[in-house]
Each structure stands twice: as C-alpha cells, then as structure tokens.
Image (cartoon, rainbow, N blue to C red; front, top):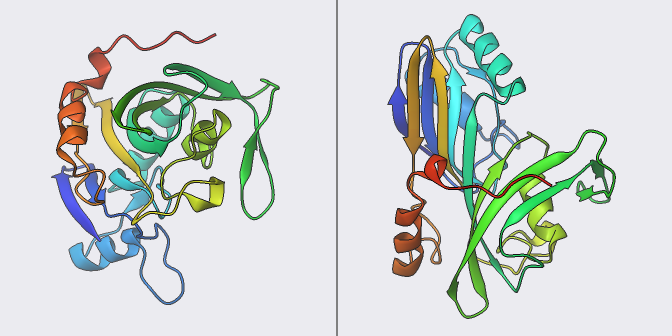
Length: 224
C-alpha cells in the first residue's frame, strides 16, 4: 500500500502504491488510515492523490505543521512533478495547458476555454516507443483531476485512465515523481521512480526518467 520515504519531526512522505484509495471506503482502510494504524500516530492531510496515481504523498504530523503546509500549497511554494504515459500523438510536444475546469458527467471534469481561475500545467514529452510517449508534468495549480484532464484535452489521455478515454492497461500510468519545499529554513527535495506497471519499469522509460531526475533544473516552457 505504501513505502515510507521520509519520517521527519513535522511531516511524513510516503510512496503510495497505485490502485490504493486515499480515503477509507468499502470497508477498506485508505492509505492515511492505514498509516495512522501502523505508526500509531495522528496524521493531517495537506494534499491528495487519486486512487490510480502512485507516488509521493506528504502528511503533516501536527495541526500547526498542517496549517503551514496548507499555506505553502495555497501560495504555490510546494513544487510537484509527475510522470505519465500516454498513447497517441499530442497536439503539442511541450508547453503549457491552461483553462478553467468544470464538472462534467460520470464524476469527470472538463477543461474550458475561459481562464478566470485556470488550471495550469507545464509539460515536456518524449517518445519512448512507437505511438507511446512519456510526459513530465508540473502543475502550477491544484485542481481535481487536473493532470488527467490536461492530457486528455490535448488528445492523449493517460494510459490506463479509462474514465478519460485512456486505453485499458494494468494500471493508470500517472506517478507523483518529485516534491520540493522549504520548511523552517531547510530545503527538502524528494524524487521517487515508479516501481509498478509493465510500461513504467521498461528500461527505455527508466533511462528517460534519469535525465529528468532533477526536474527543477530543466528549462520549463513559458506560460502563454
């Protein structure tokens, strides 16, 4: 269900497995409840990952730390990076995807042309096989299903994300890859390679991810 990446005095970082719920449901403990049970401590959520999404997940250990992290997320002072795989040819190979988001049918969201309070996603992509591309994504906002909607909007729904039109696969190929923030004058950086999914563990994908292992040093596409 999870792997502990960092256990600090004020926070905990774990690598959540794919197909694991954040919240408890259907009589099964979610990742947060399971962590609290296993560690015997109270945790505070400051952000979430969808069930299909694996990767880095941050929890605060006190209400004070939670308030600090919430303020940092609101002020976009926590940098998050994701990787995804999608089949097909995108409308653009790198750039920014910007637009307001609205609820759609079947628990889905859609991207609008308006930009009053937009979801903003920067991305790079690299072909790793015929008809299959790897994406490095940097969300500059924190909207529900933002990255899933962003890639679907440029014609390349995430592999395994059947809700948004992705081809069925052994998992949803979206992974929270990097997390960076400053706390009490100390800089924290975490990077976690995906470890499940036949396509994610492919050698070509791993090699490309190594070139993206310091995503903050890349020259990200400008917002337009």
